Length: 281
Image (cartoon, rainbow, N blue to C red; front, side, top):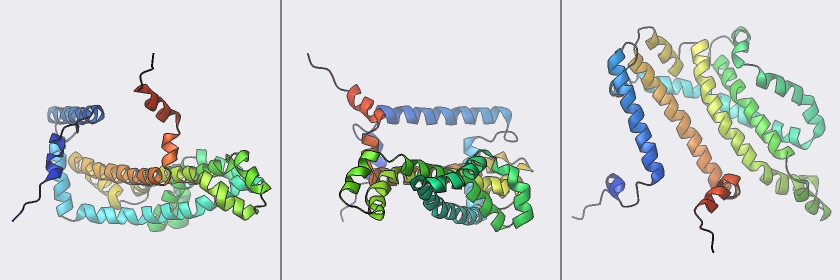
């Protein structure tokens, strides 16, 4: 019987795998983990658990079902708040960018709430919605809504006149101009707003659980901090980091796939493209 080669395991041994970028990143990770482990052993697990203990605790709370249940509870408020912010923020940002009257009507409120810390409204949120999932959804929504609106607004507003005028001169209607010119040109900005809003939504998810109710991942942090279980606290933090970084990476990959010309047309790509070239003569 023929065996299937385990290419995934042998991949680091392949020639050319260890590029300069991979080598620098791997060295950075190993050095950070080593410093963390040594520091944890010096100060003790009561103040700072090392990576080895954190991994053990991560496996324990996962197998016990406590961590998956907390993650599920957190994702409920996160998903509802984030999706609602995207569904409301994108149309509002497009209307503000397309029509000056709409911008003038909403811009003072968008600017005011954008610079105001969401935590300042937590007492009012508790009065209005209590400490249940409605309040947590409101906090998540408030954290990410304005990033989506502002990025969408800037994308639509900054569409160049040179792109619109030729289409208009050919007799295109306002709807056709919006669908065929403005929307494709603003789409990368919209995706950036969605991606930035995702990171903000995860922060809002945890902060809502820390401030409103000891539930979900934030509730685990509060509960185990009371008994000085820094190993479990870091295990939960790792899950939050993986959730955030993984989600943002997926959206960034989707953005690069949908708009490949965006990265290739930036000033950074221009410098990187010319850095390796050798001038003739």
